[in-house]
Amino acid sequence: MTPPPAEWQRLDPRMLLIYPVKELVRFLPALIALFIAGSAANGSGEWWQVLGIAVPVALGVLRYVTTGYRITSGRIELRRGLLNRHVLSTPLDRVRTVDITAPPVHRLLGLTSVRIGTGTTSGGDEDRIDLDGLPVAQARRLRADLLHLDAEESSPTPGAYAVLEFDPAWVRFAPLTSTGLVIAAGVLGVAAQGLNTVNGFERLHPERLADDAAQWSIWVAVPLALVGLAVLVSALSIGGYVVSNWGFRLTHTDAGRGGAWHLTRGLLTTRETTLDDARVRGVSVGEPLGLRLAGGGRAWAIVTGLEQDTSGSALLVPPAPRAVVHRAAGAVLGSVAPLDAALTGHGPRARTRRYTRAVGPAVLLLVLVLALVPLADAPLWAPVLVALGVPVAVALAADRTRALGHALVAGHVVVRSGSLNRRRDALETDGVIGWNLRATWFQRRAGLGTLVATTSGGRQAVTALDVPEAMAIGLAHSAHPHLIGQFLVESPAQAPTSA
Image (cartoon, rainbow, N blue to C red; front, side):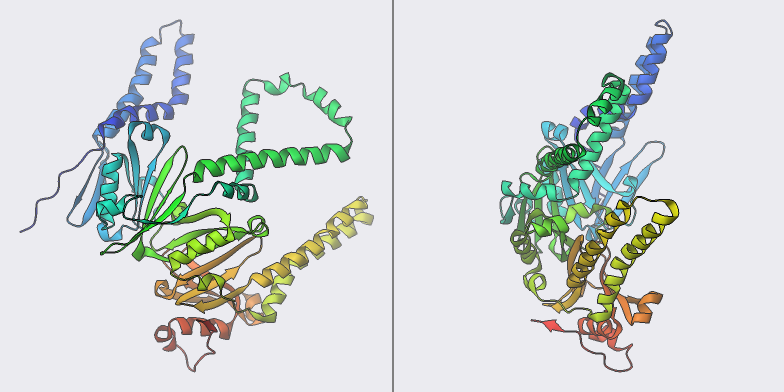
């Protein structure tokens, strides 16, 4: 006999204090315009102003009333909408991750927002299962049910052992990432817009500022401007880092039905992410140039079925010392061998491509500028400035060559590439669902190709660049001999492996 379906459950009633405010914020431009229009009508627009406020509030209440969820018959379902009813339903065995987020207002009311990652390829918010407004205890119980964990094991503290905890000394790596530049650009843009709105630029007397700046020596003004920009970017980077990662804690739960990784972080908005052990298939370690020069890095988990635009949910280690990153990533992989093993280089032809693609454009630009000196009366310092880019391009090509490599280590396919943003991916061979060897015309002329290990996690692929064809086939064959061997006429050269 089929069991009766579970009853639909509503979100916490305290969301009636949040939803109307959210709708008011959404309608704020229209409300301001309505208020101005009403004031211009000699007071006759008071009713319209009241109605303008009542409509968003009513929409917020309606959103709460028409939203419900339930878990029944091995599925989780979410419905919302009144005139346009929208029902989302997905099997429980498709649940990959559970994110529990608590913005400041939610924390004040003791509520959380739960996002259930199911591996959908849709990028729209309307096709995601988000339960915005559950008490903390209820959200953790729901997480335990979805990921088959005991309730006490789902808690971020009891029943779990800590792998990594936040160290305030890590903030020194914050200015070495691009986050500060992004935040600085946003802050300066908002400040400029605000000044323009209140005619602040006119009050600053730009002509006088220009006259004062003209009296400064360029050898003093430029270094001072660069130092000021560096201080601003560093301060914003550290602030953003602290707000995002304060209290960072990575723990692991061992359970009879399967374990899970728990990540907790955030100062103003707290976030708890749980990754099912069975879905974690590897690790990506990123070392951008700034972090690498300072001995730092960061790491993400490769989680099967995780949407590409939610990669932040799989963050394992924020910018931190390299030893810390390797220790945490090694704990997830079960071995540090894939992170420390020497990689097999891709040979002289791959090295030639690195130099050709880096140095060639720099040399062509230099020749073009040299030609413009007599033809277009370009200043003599222009080719000198451009010539400085040639040794930089040579150094970049050499660094890219050193980074390029692959290996098959401890049951993981390991690839590395990049210079300005170097990345090392370690993916379980069991997580590879297909191999793709492709080559451009230039690669075919050099006997090289790009080997892609397709997976359903992270960026959906782990890519080895400019691999000699025989070496690429050997790597794929060593990882999956039964899969690749049936397509080979003769045995390929085996890819080097490490214990």
